[in-house]
Length: 328
Ligand code: AHR
Figure 1 (cartoon, rainbow, N blue to C red):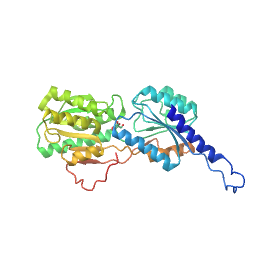
Figure 2 (cartoon, rainbow, N blue to C red):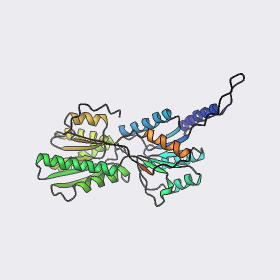
Figure 3 (cartoon, rainbow, N blue to C red):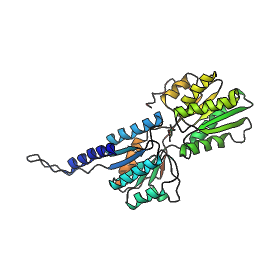
Figure 4 (cartoon, rainbow, N blue to C red):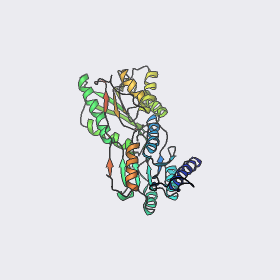
């Protein structure tokens, strides 16, 4: 709250300075400058390097676009996100934006925003609602496509190995979140019906490095060397899982095929080193798109309901020598 007040004070001071007339003796300004758009953004937490990159992208883009930003971190708690949205409504921001930690449970607070006439941008993740008018638009990855890309890599890899059978374990993200649901769905749809694959178990690692390691230890204790493939919903959990695999005495990337999502620099480095086999990109760099949408909504313009960034897939079959540093 203190940080939000501090940021708000800076914003209001900035707005006041813009709105004030010239001081005595100063030349008359040609036209009054429009007050900057005030955007309230509720970030869901700091669970991964990806999320830290996402926060940075929003902050840097706000500066570039001249948008006044009130950013609050919910530290992985939906109640804190709801409180943040209510604070933004009280402050009468121009636009509210948030990355919903889970999909359910937003109707009441979003109805309050709608009643206050404040448009809402969903960033990164979706919500479940019967009333789509509760948000103006969504900008974020196509997580089903990401899951499909993970599955398509596995089909290609199995063909290349001439594998007759592969056992898969899956470490998923935060339960009831859009990336967890859709990355699971896209992957399973793609390999379904192919008798070469058996999914031994799917468990949640909450998108955390520590839980990824914990989950992989549990899976190795239970299935040992029967595990052929790890499909992990984010790089953070993959890094934790790789520690557990090494500790168990197996070689990540060769004894166990590893497919991960995000595209953090650390994962790309391990892909290049042969310890990860496939990295499906999910970009955290949504800041510019969010600011463009916020400015349009504040000006009363219409915006597309859904926008997805372009994303790539990096695999052991590709030449990665020219890949630019990832920045997250
Ligand atoms: O919602 C995007 C996911 O959230 C990223 O894949 C993950 O790293 C983050 O925690």
